[in-house]
Length: 279
Ligand code: C2E
Ligand code: MG
Ligand code: MG
Ligand code: MG
Picture 1: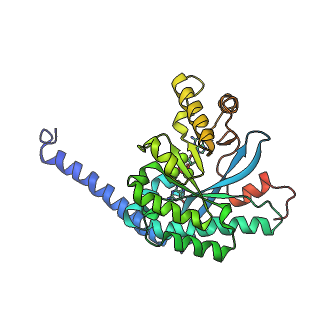
Picture 2 (picture 1 turned 60 degrees about the vertical axis):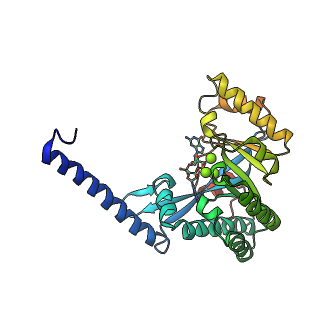
Picture 3 (picture 1 turned 60 degrees about the horizontal axis):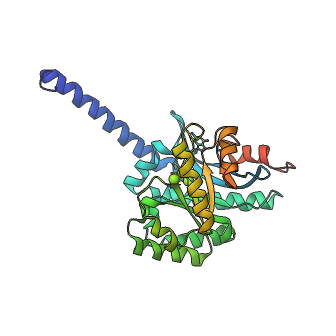
């Protein structure tokens, strides 16, 4: 194909590639400065107890308020941060900010609620992970049991190493949840040996649950299995009442999704979920 277009065809392709590479290098440079420029933000998505529709926790989700591109979603910069190693700095900042916010809300008369923070693979395998989490908790004053770390099955390819890290995190007193559950490759036999507290059912099983009996069966089975293993379970990506009804019918006690709330800025959470307003 390339040959057919001759020299020009090749040059066109090469220019496209150059453009792509330059955009990427530019973005990388900007991301490097984003923290000190205070362009990173943490949004919080409420986690809801189905029984009474109350907010029982939040998931911290990073955003980048880019000077010209506007509010950027993690999918467009977390992979770059992962590749370059900037994820350590960004991840530590998100963790600190999220813990600090929980303490601030409580100090201002709001509820004391747990926060879930996503860890990337590189962070999970970082040598001083436990020490720096301990330091962030000490600095912010958040009790360890109010911090939940979200990891994914794909990070636990080496079960011996993973169990060692998980055990150390457990000794700290933080909670662990398995994010995007059902999409990775982990063997079910690990579930009984991994010291984790919660499964988060991936959104991909929820999106068609009202039409797709296979998805419905998988979700019902995950919920039941979690209960038998004494694990908490939360369903992600609930967008409609019909989806919620199916989850409730299958004894799912916690959900997260646009049906109740999108991820919000800290200020929006205060306005929409806290009474009375003292912020
Ligand atoms: P995740 O941890 O699985 O987070 C849930 C994602 O689903 C969020 O996307 C959230 O906005 C979205 N979501 C929640 N409810 C619904 C719904 O009802 N419908 C739909 N369509 N989407 C819903 P977001 O914020 O774009 O984050 C994407 C991913 O980026 C996260 O997936 C997580 O893996 C990663 N991420 C976000 N923040 C951080 C961070 O601070 N550190 C690291 N390492 N990764 C992060
Ligand atoms: Mg998550
Ligand atoms: Mg995730
Ligand atoms: Mg997820």
